[in-house]
Length: 101
Image (cartoon, rainbow, N blue to C red):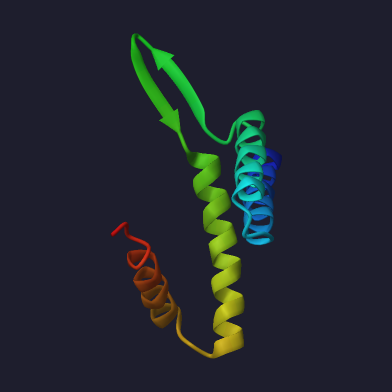
């Protein structure tokens, strides 16, 4: 993993830590804004225009997210004794529960 992708992963962790540290909406927004600025500075998303066609490269974000999720799932499997499949199902159920109204 290159240095920029590692920085992207650290920014994702920083975002979680800053957002989870407070229930205050202004503080959560500040965590979001700070993380977005860091992702922009680190070229976490690269946009290019070629012959009028916009191309977006999300590689760093996907690699950073994947590495972070892999680490968390391995720790959760170890701590709970549950299989990766069971944990993935629970995670999907949690995500589905986040749906708007």
